[in-house]
Length: 211
Image (cartoon, rainbow, N blue to C red):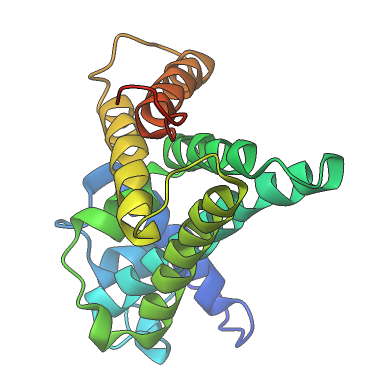
């Protein structure tokens, strides 16, 4: 028996989120239950319902936290690069791709719930807003690189989705251990190569150069 801990209004929700992530790491979202989350958090089985009406609402909170962390990760290298040089939009865009892969390798439980568990965004406004923020950061990086001339013109959302598909695929294969690379640094080196190859294919061609 796990002893019950006193309920404190300010720390129950973070404790539930932490316990949820730990449980997802072990059994995945399909076998996830609020009762087991409560047991791991050391609280009564009814306590989670103070914050979450059902299992999917807690999973949505995990996904929301994941998208918020992802948006911060995508934006952070761009801010650092801006401090060093006022005009390296392409470098910021490429750094965001590595940040995506790094986030996925370090938070695979969040990534799993964010993209593999069927959560209807229209049911969870906070989740929808967090997902839109992460997307808007990436689209903004594409638009900056387009203005700089280092990415071709056209629909920035389409280019952002192309880049996202690449780094998400690398991340998922790495998490599933389907890539021939063992360490995070090896995966990131491969991701750097893949991102550069993507840019080489997308880079605007000089006038008169065959496409």
